[in-house]
Image (cartoon, rainbow, N blue to C red; front, side, top):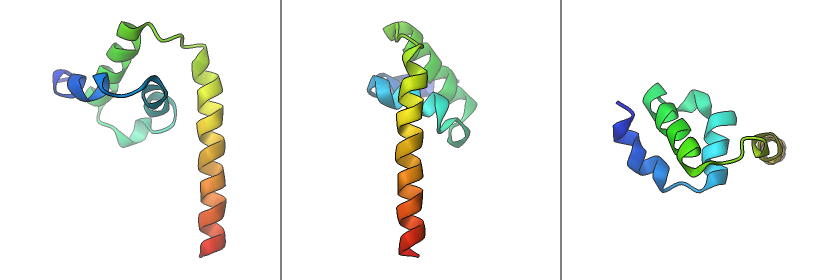
Length: 72
């Protein structure tokens, strides 16, 4: 099943792949996550950078949520 998502994940940049695995995992089907994990391994992405990127993405999301709250 992951084959249907391999093409899509291969077009993503590293930061997007990491974001999907660490922040947006619940939004994706299991097959998409498996394709994502395959792409991360294929590219030999250093998973120690996941924590750093996850922190940045989380901070960005929190800022956006604050702005949205102020606008409502």
